[in-house]
Image (cartoon, rainbow, N blue to C red; front, side, top):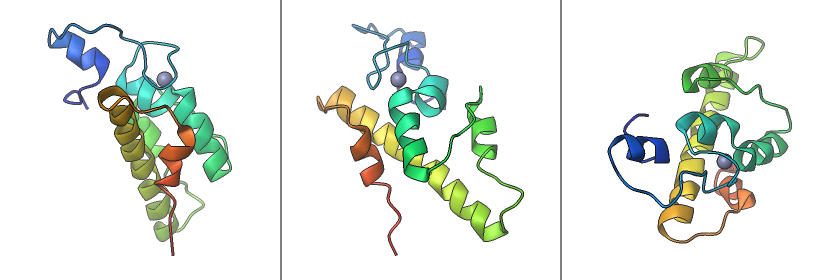
Length: 118
Ligand SMILES: [Zn+2]
């Protein structure tokens, strides 16, 4: 995760930026924890999408493990973990579209690409 070109990592590498603010919510500095765990643009939409509230952890690993539910079968947990990876991947892709291609922040777009189809 330290290799991602997220704002805080770019600053550590000496890259000068116009702003350090999260490009999605524009409310706080962009960090890995913020973008992938706490950004309201991402996770409010995600909670609406999956239909349940998600506990906001302080580390990516804890957040990932939160998607392992003891009451589910192995296949059920596998599906939840795929969902987590999909959310993170689509969030990163959308963030990069906003930052590098002047995309418009659209939480519906993030999750429209992530719908599971039969
Ligand atoms: Zn944000």
